[in-house]
Amino acid sequence: MAQTFEQAFWSGGSLDTLYDRLRIHPPTLHADPFFNVFCAAMREWRAAQAKGKLSTNMRRSRHRRLERLMHATVVRKMDALEGRMGFLASVGSVSPFVGLFGTVWGIMNSFRAIAVAKNTHLTVVAPAIAEALFATALGLVAAIPAVMAYNKISGDLSHYGNRLDSLVEEVSSFIARQLEEEP
Image 1: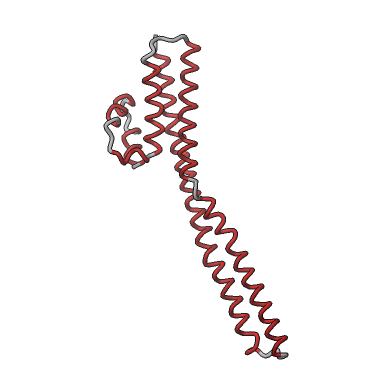
Image 2: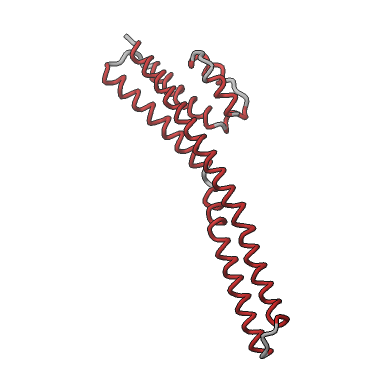
């Protein structure tokens, strides 16, 4: 979705024409943050244009308001996209400790088995040590993919946020040009 919108946006055509075309958009575009940021700015821009001629100070104020609106829309959309990142971060950071807890528990069981059997032979401690190593492995099996996923998604979201910021800057430039051209 984002790529389709971005291709249309960066094609060099008129933003007014693009907005008119997108108002009859497929429903799937509603979920696209690029579409939402652009449409929020263009709706506000059109509403402001309908008010007629303004002084230079009022034009600057309108431009700042539009920029704030776009930035607020970007922040809301990025917050929604980043909403579940905390879960991945928690799994990635807590899982090794869960595995470590299992390791400690298994070693404690080994010592208990030694005390009960009054024997340090490998057959006495091996089952509990195996459990401890298994718990450690489970912690790592959960942590490693979670950390890798977190890093990948975090990087992708950062890139996506930069693309949204570029969109905001371009729309802001368009609006600034339009305001400068007003008599």
